[in-house]
Length: 427
Ligand code: PMP
Image (cartoon, rainbow, N blue to C red):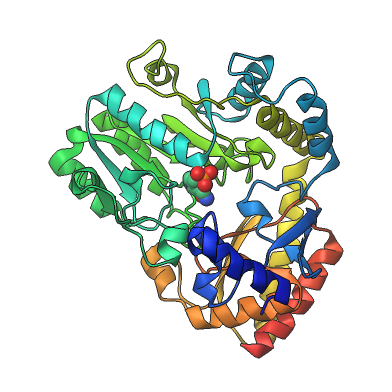
């Protein structure tokens, strides 16, 4: 249970904000409790209004890869803000960020900035439709791509957590254009392409789905998607809003060596400020206004503060050999958790790539959301609250993936493992 001041604030918030929160998963509804309200965050720690401090594995849902409020980002924001916080005209930061993304992400030749991951996926879908002249898209059950009408069909993350993977308010005519298939099922894709392959504008996917647990593609699956989309002139869109700049400089596409046509980005590249981006092949990106017929825009897109903060974050990652360090921290946590599971006689499935991880409360293999749904959700809740009481904050839903930052020290990870050992006893 969270402290009295958080409870009081939540009660007040609910009177003026729907559900008391500005994004559903923050409400802790899935874990049957009230959320804590944050006073401040620094490094690996987040402190609530009742002055309780937690080791944080949510990291503002991914952006805080250096940890919270790193000096390099806060100083950059202060400096850049002195010259203005928004211009609405081109500024040099935009070129620097675009160049950085083009340099780091294998498939990106040109890129357009947005203010959120949602805008990035919405724009990428529109662009794929404009480029191909086709309407239908394929997405995967449990993959979350933001709250875009066409993509709120069998969605993951908060939509799944709150039992609304198909949102109300999306016209049937929209959702009818979205074909939903199980992730990792070769045959399902083959069947659709055999019958209407030439009507499909795009396949959009999280290449490592991380919004319905954290699962990996089967051997050859991403290559299969690449081949079948190439054959049918369908645009392959990797949504790397979560995995991009997180698992490697170039995201999953760098790790697996598969090149999508378009990539959606966000989170880490904003350093904690609102940001998103979509980019890819020049011939497709050149269909975007003002040189092409696909309209896409934003008053605050390319905001100097967000881009400067993001560039500072990417620079710090590069300077610190960040991805190697994150892998080492992830390996320490994985070894520890696997050791604890063994000690407690539990054979739960644990998935990790670099600094992203998810523990499933079942011994079954996890290949898609149907598998994830089979895990023991009540055990997750008990584990979550036991950890929170002990000062460790994991994502408040069994469908969320957790994040390690560069600020998590070996000591933090040891403390986390101690808390987990006690929590395993309680469940
Ligand atoms: N795509 C993925 C893979 C995401 O994880 C998210 C958000 N968690 C989004 C898109 C939407 O991004 P935003 O919340 O910034 O709109």
